Image (cartoon, rainbow, N blue to C red; front, side, top):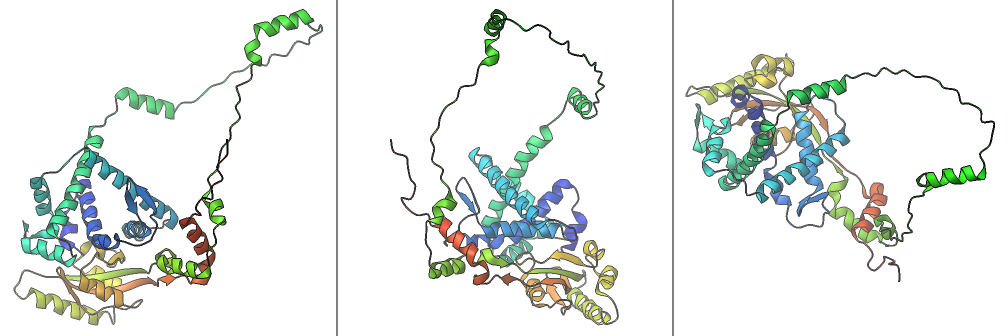
Length: 389
């Protein structure tokens, strides 16, 4: 979807900003989860805690961007976590350096985004409608944009100002492409027919004492603090394990995997544009009785970018699309096509092309893992055997 944006936005910088905006709209609800709870953070960066749900959100965004490509899930999760840490370190650095973006710069950037434009001009109603649909205030959105811009400017200042001299470039390729020619001669040892005397041996030793010097050695006493060993001395009954399992059930949940495709019938400029788009969508739904969905998408969809791939939108994530679109996509069965669904961009026919239901691992299947996690989360007091003097 987002037909006009995809057709008009070009360039590396514009693509980066566009992806960033999509991530923002995908993660609006994250603040709702940052309140209380007993979940242990996956990683902490100078007081900023990231939980498993944060990593999952980042992983889902990665996976959506790589839709249709093969990738290793564990590697991608590791990269998602590393990116969260890198971005937080960068944000904390620019804030510590008191780097800022002016209100005028942020305002000009927001007004330039095609999301909030109609007929090539910024539309305040469109702006407020889109933010309101995501439960985001204008002040909070502007704050996020400022953070993103100052981080982008800081990185761009380093990248754009870097250079390599001709000598460095030549040296690099010289090392990369270098070869070696070796020549050698075999010299036979001359047999020793006479053994050295005691005086000769003593004199040689005096002249080469450094060759017989041993390195200094020390004896060290230390205490090894092992979380696993400390946890082994902690007892947890079945009620405690079940309580931990219920509290941390998200750790043992496999999220639903749902891929969707769509056919978009965009609004025209006529006064009857809504009715005309709906009429086209209804006719296309009837045509699907005789035509393949992907073929029809390539033929009639106004979303030209996805039409080339049969209307494929990749993995479906809640919080990215409009509510009506998400509600319809969430209720469809595998292979089922929706009735026409209205959004701010037109009417959609939506189809689920891949569906792997989410699953919560039962308590008995993860009981051993729950026991380990429970003990690690609750170390035994006064259990460290400190050495005595």
